[in-house]
Amino acid sequence: MEIGLVELSRLQFALTAMYHFLFVPLTLGLSVIVAIMETVYVMTNRPIWRQMTKFWGTLFGINFVLGVATGITMEFQFGMNWSYYSHYVGDIFGAPLAIEGLMAFFLEATFVGLFFFGWDKLSKVAHMVVAWLVAIGSNFSALWILIANGWMQNPVGAEFNPDTMRMEMTSFFDVLFNEVAQAKFVHTVSAGYVTAAIFVLGVSALYLLQGRHKDLARRSIAVASSFGLAAALSVVVLGDESGYSASHTQRMKLAAMEAMWETHDAPAPFTVIGFPDREARETHYAVEIPWAMGLIGTRSLTEEIPGINELEAESAEMIRDGIIAYDALMTIREQRDATPQEVRDTFEAHSDNLGYALLLMRYVEDPRDATDEQIAMAAEDTIPGVAPLFWAFRIMVGLGFSFIAVMAFFFVRASFYRMQFPRWSLYAAVAIIPTPWIAAELGWFVAEFGRQPWTVDGVLPTALSASHLSVAELLITLAGFITFYTILFIVEMGLMVKYIRKGPFQDVAETEAWQARHEHRLRTHDGQGPFANPAE
Image 1 (cartoon, rainbow, N blue to C red):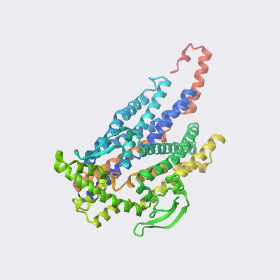
Image 2: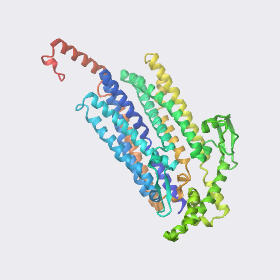
Image 3: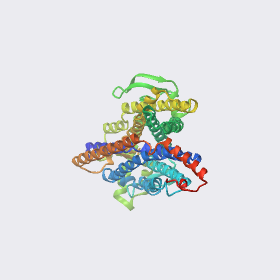
Image 4: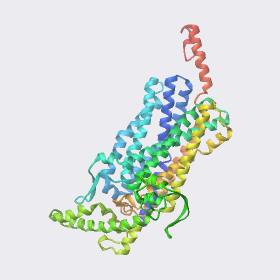
């Protein structure tokens, strides 16, 4: 297979995934913020909280619809662009996707409809429950998707069947509670909460700068800053958990993120900044914090973190071991039921490294014919792009700490300064609205680009996963997806800007004044006469 086809397939999927991920974080976070606001409305019976719920709920609905439209396309791509991947691991990967559709998406979509059309048909408490079910459904969708993705990062609970030539699930429990999947879920969801909090904060700050909807804006900032501060702190803590998980499940990814070429004596330092040089196998002008990486990656002072060079040498040995498994597999395929037991035993003893032998198929048709030079080339392929990972990770982390500072500032001002905010801080809140999306996209890039050259880490190389399509077909569909998704993005932005400019459906002060007049008239006329009719 030509590598150009694989690269085009990767580019197409990367673009559609990253377009889709523009909508996911805001959906996750806004669903919870809206549910919180409606809960306050039910507890206080203040009309302003109902208006806040409906206003932010409208923006959530716009984002939700476009997120669904972009997400469905991605699932079709598994069959269209990655057919061998779907055949090879479909028994495991397909299960969480099916559960996501049946259990999470239908729950979410059903209650989204009740949320928007049930205001006058459900009691306040029932509608609040619907709001929380929308939030739970959104988060369940993320859970099952990230269980599927987590398995690609750390393929547990499955084994290769030499008779069917496919991966088969051995333990759904292991797939469900995969440590990588669980760490990715809580980290990704927390990042979505931060994204929504920054969005609510920025839009509310814009209203205060314009002198519009001040009560709604100040209360929204109070909710967003408290919720966002907790979420931003969680992102850092849970990101640390992801780093610890990578230290023993994806060691090459961790080494590449740190541009750690050589294995340091424990505990390893953390490189704050530097300039990775792959050809020289060193990081120039590195500024390091002693011990920090060892504590983050291993949570000990004695355990080493292997460097890229050592891991590359290990990969070469695993490739050689995988060739033994591949040779036994070919014998099993040729002899079928007549295969001697010792051949099957040989395969079982070396099957864990079969995927490493498959890396050679980029250079030679039969891995058993590989030369030492080709083995070395395949081992070098296990090193992902060091410089892109190094910088993407540091920008993401830097933005993450900045979110803590921003949320802490607005939380203090909202809590102890009677919701009075300096104008410079309001301008800053508006300016940083795009930054959580940048951080989220970089995080997704680190997770997926750092897994290369694998589709399923250590099991199936990306170069073998793609469908046999022509370059023309890929270019046409790639252009089509870019055009379609760009139109959807423009529609999303247009609708968001329209409803943000429009603001709440009714001015809060007017509503509260109406309610006060209405309650006064009811008391004055004892519930009798024309003034008892709310629709006067």
